[in-house]
Length: 168
Image (tube, rainbow, N blue to C red; front, top):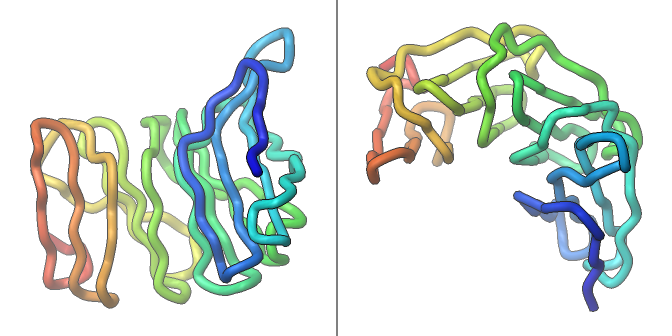
């Protein structure tokens, strides 16, 4: 089964388990674009829309467990849920750069985006700290194996690896 949205795009999908999943993107509300969050509790058979409160395009979603999840998007948007996606609250990212990917292990997280943006938190996003990426190019994806070893990839096929949690 599938869900179709008129005048919209979905950019990421994330499943917590076999039944519970989310997709994020944007759709037109007739007067402009607004962030879109869709949720399924039956393995993708049915999807329901959740209010995002974000005008910006939403690019990436990830949960560290059944309750705690993060979404990132354009203009530095970071949203967090601590109740399984029922409510989404804004976190201050400290940037207005577009953010393309988020990855969490427990309360430790990384966000990457435009102009070589890398942000780091060890407090569940209560505060985000910039990390030097060594590039001004877009970084489109981030993935960590554990809290020290991770990779980012982006513009011109660049892949960068860290072995110290993103310090360098």
